[in-house]
Image 1 (cartoon, rainbow, N blue to C red):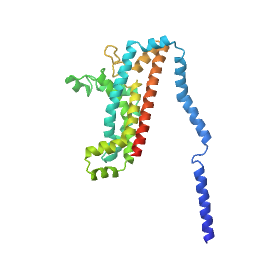
Image 2 (cartoon, helix red, strand yellow):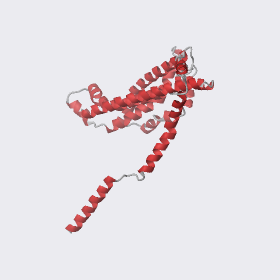
Image 3 (cartoon, rainbow, N blue to C red):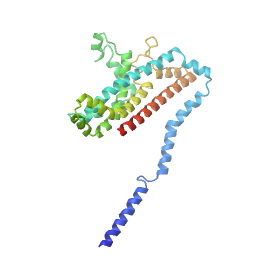
Length: 293
């Protein structure tokens, strides 16, 4: 009896050892090769083509393309209003994620699904819908026009479009962290005499900060390169400074000015890469600091 038990225990130990040493998904080499191939075809090769074409441009052509007044204005507009939209998304993204995680109410699943609507909806459709809705004859634009507030074809409309496409990044980055957040930290803060405001900013927000930075960075980077949703509602007026960088690139391509379009796209690519790189560094440092507390 004892011998059979010891045999079964030894067999179980061998299986556990074999399981720990193996992989759950077989064919790691094949799957890794497929992953690298897809990554190269879909991401690395297009980026390499932009870089290779950019190297064919002389430095004087590159500088003249970037220093054009309309290009500098478009970069300023894209960066500024993408930043404003990302800040607004960070505030309301926390609120939306908090409501979806902490409260139960009728239609919660529908509301949770609507958060991802900007991902599924074509950006051109979103731009047309927003521009019509916020025009002086639209459902929301007409009451605002009576108050002297014009939305469509202004910086306000541009910001609204960028908020629309960026809000899912913030909500989906914060929501999983809130779902795993241990409420005992809140209870401990209340026991120690902290009020609701102090508990949120000193306990909850410190835990959400890495995810919040990630959502902010993704929304910011998406806004800088956004085209479809802003092309209609912004107005694309050089006089009113509502042109964005993506519109300038498309304008250059329509005029067959590939060198200028490539130069602007390269600068846009570098800005997005640096933005995500800095946000990831901040996130890693914040995560280490939070885990050490």
